[in-house]
Image 1 (tube, one colour):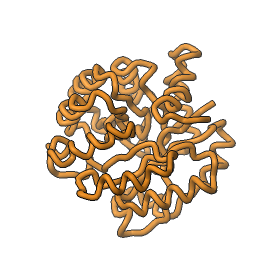
Image 2 (image 1 turned 90 degrees about the horizontal axis):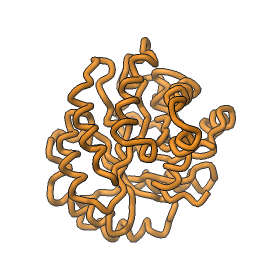
Image 3 (image 1 turned 60 degrees about the vertical axis):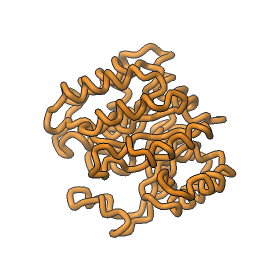
Length: 277
């Protein structure tokens, strides 16, 4: 069984999805569960975690609507303004939907290098911790020093680091990213998604061989119990097909035992997101 721990749905709007630049123009269209389900059936994927792609409360409602219609959506990572005075009320409202497993903020787009460490943001994470909700960390490698300080504040929340912090594979930068990932991996409540990698390499010329050292480092840093498979569909389509993303993950997992492979592809996601089935 396979849980895809990271994918997105959207009804494309140029202003809302302005992050889809000209190099990514092939995904400037709608992507809905009806597009994804056949890929899952073809590739033996059991279900998924749908992750926010827009920073509005309406995004949560949109994802909830998709989940009501499609039972292969096993969980949702939504968005909520963690700095808002209305945070508790908003969280109370969404608490009626247990399929919402947690939230994330697009920190990679924030210019403030200390964004994660600002008091109002820390207060918001404290509220998630009280409610046993997951927080997903979306950053670039240059933001990892703040991540290291940030996660130490919250030993009792489940963190998930998205896309292995988006290493600069295309540029070949490794050592500084690896050093910080090892340190973050020592924090036992931080998990890491093995996802979004082919789009951090050259879209046209990426190879498995150039990506494997980054995968090996994450396995070393987090261990087989705290890594999760994710496709980053449909963003991955700008650099390859779904089957290529899954093949990359399976080739990486070949070095794991049978039990560790089941953890990577299924049980770790089941634990992190408290999935019932």
